[in-house]
Image 1 (tube, rainbow, N blue to C red):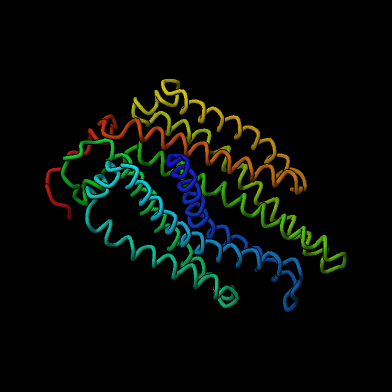
Image 2: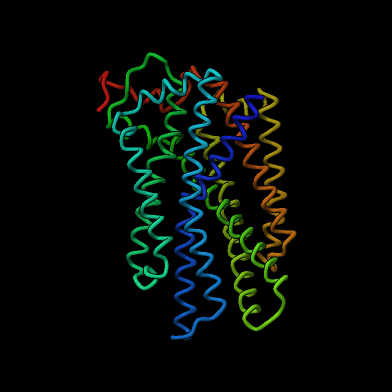
Length: 347
């Protein structure tokens, strides 16, 4: 029961962080589309560009809210892990350079302030696109650089010796540029793009359901066309990201320690079963995403694709947790053999 709760909590946490990492960047694309449509008819406001602009504003707000929820879920996950005996994780966390932990709170606040300002100041920033781009790119790249790398690194360090000394700043930077860290960070970022694509698909379905109840009209037809455009772009983003996961996933698999890779490929039946189930769900998801991306992004296709994506996330998260449980306290990671701390105190 605790294991299932940890898997579901971690899945929800990862989904929230995924939206936070890529959501603001996609909102920038929606802002650009709104400006382009407004530029085609200066001085006029049509339902189509209003709908797309509202979608961008909505996604910007959902992004910082997702990070706030993700922080709470992460803390809950940490408490559950502590009571479940996940000491290697916390021992590894202590091995990070002190400034990684101390500055972490400030970096989260930095992201929240910039993205909240981008959401609440949407209309004002639409007249200053250079500032909007600067704020959003700065916030998201800072989040992507610091947090996926830090927690993937902690997972790697947890496989090492419990008595190993803390890393210095230079040793930590060497660690995060090793293939096994980079491959997993790339996997998280590409997954985030797929999740945000699914969020747009869900938003488009919600919009079109509301418009169907409102009845027909010229403005409503323009708004429905914009909602269809949002759904199509969301489906194409999710489809492209899912296809990109194929080579990225092979990279991750090749970079895994031997014990973890063997668990995925058959030595642990439960891990292998979850992995194969996730692959089957991914293939089914590709079918529905392709239908949505090359068609009209119909309601049934979008909802089925979203449900399959959630299933894939839960299954892969469960497999990841099994891998970590098997590999903790075993120094089998290539990066652990390469990083040999020379100082007992972090900088």
